[in-house]
Length: 251
Image (tube, rainbow, N blue to C red; front, top):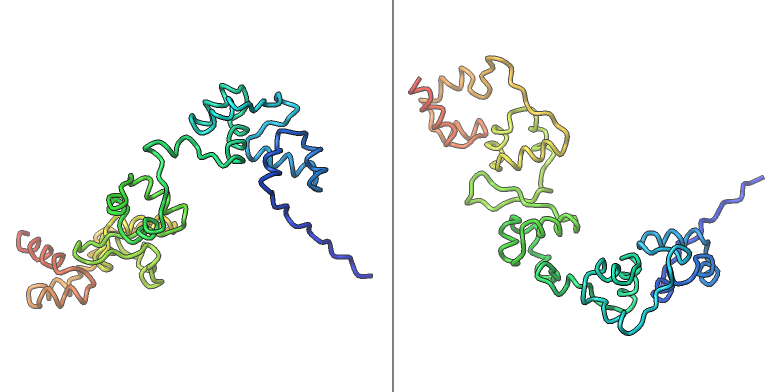
């Protein structure tokens, strides 16, 4: 005999008028009206921070009490009404009243144009263009899953997105020092270090007396060949080659 497949019941989509009744009538009564299990009602009510009717007195939403909504924080109104802030928020939302924070300087309503800026500039630059704090820009960007920009070591070059790492570039992490990777990829040290840590790759530990990229063969050529040619071959900047030449001259 074939086993009967169990059909999973579709998740209930809560209507505005149903949300208004949470905490206003017993969970069992609301469940009966909607046609779902009492446990589902209780779970939804708890997720919104609304006390069950059996644990709190029914709120008398007089015109005077309703006038408080949106004029103060939900917590302050809840203290006045002697109920939970979740019940105040639920009532306010059911009436389409904006929260008190929206009338304060700390609230910011994001426009499509502002959201388009996120990830196109470094967070400090985006914050300056939008007129909000850097922390707010970073938080909104993370909420929307927008990758940050990696700073270039050469400031004149355009920044690159945090999602632009290739498999070949990632393979360099931990195989050489973070400083060497910054030279090879022309990225800021903080960008390289952050990527390596995020992937759980341990830092490169150079063996004692290891010459790194400055092998005896390279040193032998450092005064005979142009810094540009040698830098390109080693995958470092010309400045790094000049720096090594000066170290050898001083030594």
